[in-house]
Image (cartoon, rainbow, N blue to C red; front, side, top):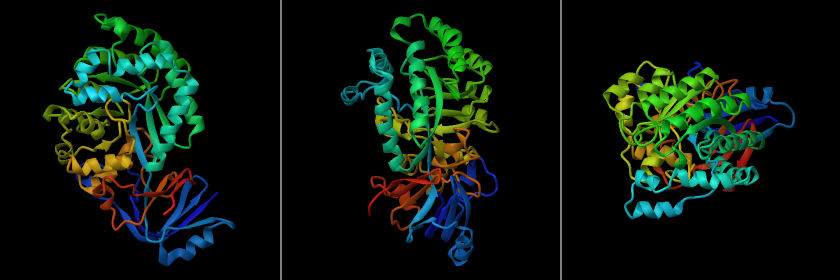
Length: 421
């Protein structure tokens, strides 16, 4: 089916130059066309233009095409959320109370909470249960405007359960219209039975998990939590080396809790992205400069855990690109609402609205290897689109941090969410 959307107040994030990301000062630029129309053909954007050329759209439109009157609303690419853990067996609100009482993230983990808590429940959960709960979360994030999402494993922490998680993610790819990227994160935490034997667990990941994940083609990427109290640079180096031998490009959890060396080892292995980055200084920025690695910030985790925020302003001013993602997970960021992440970009990181929009669309797509297909509006790009509610300007998107600004969500040229006004 094709769609013809007319009377668009502003068509945002127009990119016909083949840009796969935007960096530094260019992040403050948001190309747009006012008073516009847009035509889709199946799952792609066929054409667009100003309303004074609407006759051109009608000439191209097939009989029976569905017309949508945007009636002064805005249209932009759907959000690309490049870092989540949304396949999980249960929420962890009791640990949230522990946080309120003053326990740190690391203290909760040492008591068997955190990731190990989810891993224990993951072992008991069936694939069917995990699929049902994850589909509810996918429907929720789709309603907020997300059309592409990366989902990590990492709550298995043994070969059987890691494979179970990845098979669930593969099934979700079949069931949901959302574009899903799968990442293997066996190196998310050290299981209790390997306490004091961390190297043996790394050996298990390298010698058993990675070969089986690769043999079943269950993952698009590989990830390691390289940080204080988790996996060392040496561990990470070994795991990434093994993953790349099986065709798995890295995406790294780095520098959430300390200056861990995770950014540098990620760049060394040409990681697609390094994520979190709360602890980023001059050396880390120098390592990222000129690399193909996308710095990805997760403000939801800093907000929820009360951590410091990554130095986004310093990174952008140094000429780096920046993406933002939700980190949707039950322990440190229990929300996949990318509208809120967009707002945190301006509230917490002091990003301009244009910079924040670029971070959750084009640069978010780049952090998943998808920016040739989505993350911007251009002829031939995927028709993954958001029609906003009646808002005064695009600056309103980060400004109204508690409001749902999305009225219609289109994924692959199909209307998948349509809210009453």
